[in-house]
Length: 146
Image 1 (cartoon, rainbow, N blue to C red):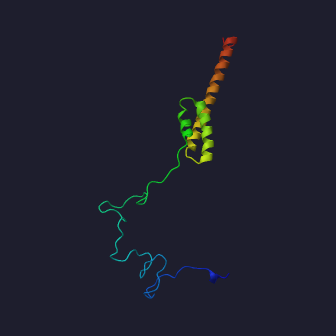
Image 2 (cartoon, one colour):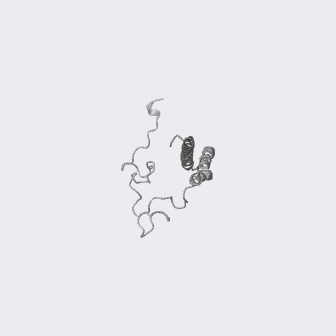
Image 3 (spheres, rainbow, N blue to C red):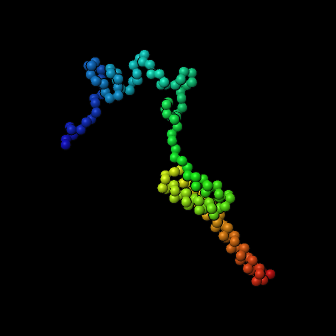
C-alpha cells in the first residue's frame, strides 16, 4: 500500500469552487465551514434558550430525563446503620454486602467497606477492653495489686 491509497479528507472550501460543488464535510452548501448558519436563518422550534431567560446551564438535553443510577445495596446500608447499634453485626453485614456488590454490580461498596472497617475496629476495641478487665480482675483476686 502506498501513501496515495490513504484518504486524507476533503479539500478545504475556497471561493473559487463552482456553485454546484458539494460542500466540505459538515458545512452547508455555498458557505465555508465554521461560520455558522446563513444570515436570516432561524433555529427550529424547541432549540436555543427561551426568550427572556438567558443562556441555560448544563443539564440533560430537552426530552431526556435524568440518567439512571444503579441501586444501592440494602445490606451495605444496613452495615453502616448497625455500626451504632451492634458493631459485630455490622462487620458481618459488610462482608456479605461486598460479596453481593461484586456479583450484582450495585452501588454501596464504600458503605459496606465502612461497615467492615468500623465494625472490625469496634469489635477489636471491645475484645481489648474485655481482656484488660479479665487481667485486672485476676490480678486483684490474687492480691498482687495491693
